[in-house]
Length: 390
Image 1 (cartoon, rainbow, N blue to C red):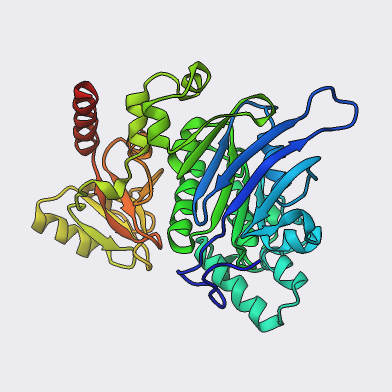
Image 2 (cartoon, one colour):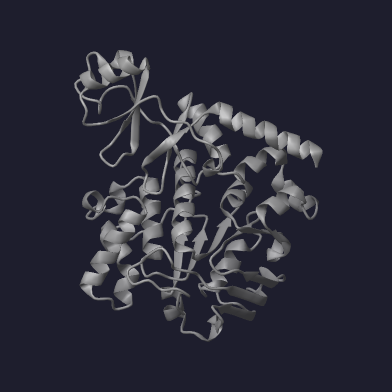
């Protein structure tokens, strides 16, 4: 099982493969009803498909049958045209990435060792593994020099999840299964991890099957959403905008919930609107005195401080520069920011935290602009007018 466009050591042209489930059923001994009953669906190559439904409906069981962590009772599953049920289960799992809630890292392994697990099992040589580990750490936004030798207990929840995603992608699998991977972290970190996944997907184009009970997360991440009822019955399988606009029945409408028009904000990305620029930006290495002079020349009150990689780190007001010894300690650190992959709903929530305009970052965390409340409110007004017309 190979990617349709393989890249040695990673790259930007990697594609996933199509997955087909045909009449897949799972019955557990002693149970009167099947946990999963006669599921048939096609998961397109290179897309993110979300399985969303209430707890206990069978969505995780359905996903785990794809890599045979749970064996189907009947039916057929093909991955890239190959019958998954005829493959060696261990070999199959090494070609399917798997990321779970709370990362599931080996606590006695370092970050690098955790990421290297599957390449090691596949017999990659040491140099190739080391190169891949560094590449994956950089890809998920963890500085190899800083995190290479750390253990999971020394990481935040968000950092652990990044390592989990890096480990799942390390062997360059065409398929990635994700079982509520961001469910155990705080809302801000969760939004950042969602953005990171979308950024990675824009580069890698894997086939991703993602389980969640959060419909807002499904709308934000999914190219397609499968809304599941009991026994994984597919109530509706369509694009997020189609489900928001036309729920198939009352059960799906219950998932969509109130404020469907406001949920349209989760379909629009920050990259879709025009960004402003901060009145002034400054490198963290600049002296407070020189920045104070620049603010005076521009008749500005605030400066956005960027680190050595041009990533936004803090806002500093003119009055806070007087007694400051460096820009690294002046002002206040950023509580939240958004990326070009973020939704306008994410941006709105970040503004409530920051209390004003929010810096926007690009593919490597670099500053690309600022989004303000006026921009989001104008977009909401336009959506309301369009909704009223339709």
